[in-house]
Length: 213
Image 1 (spheres, one colour):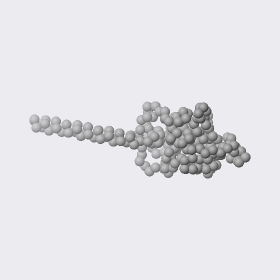
Image 2 (cartoon, helix red, strand yellow):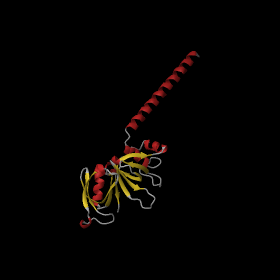
Image 3 (tube, helix red, strand yellow):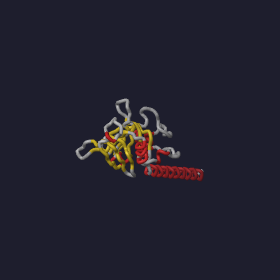
Image 4 (cartoon, one colour):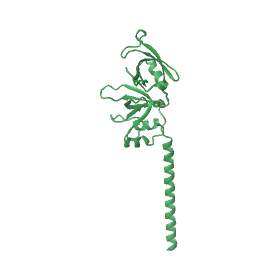
């Protein structure tokens, strides 16, 4: 009986040590996973369906992000598509109209969350192959708006006096790190006679791009 008790005790200790080792390894793997998380990955997890399924949920409350921009502006956006260094969605406001917008990830200074949202943002996502849009950079998106001759509103933050710098117009061309904007009033077509000026806008000045038509 003494030998049986000894072996039972050794077996219990071994199981305990193995369990502790497995728990330690799991904790270390989780720390490594969290250390590799990017802002883009956490925003994508928040915008995904409630079960983390591929694609974005269609419910009114799903995919809604409260974002603080580097300019200090607070915006509420329903995220629809994530690119390499940007995401696109609908601006959520009291009115029925929901303008489309593109926000560079570099323009984000903070994301406002509750405790449940923090947990959702940390969850492990599917390792399914990435959509094509996820490999597209901001310059590609702006070139598409340029090709479509879409009227846009470029939010460039605030000037030294604290006034908002919002530029209206049509993108004429897009370089590697900047775009050319032909400025004109809202609601008018891009016609030479209606253009009030031209401006080169570096990408790092862009807080948000709103599509106005």
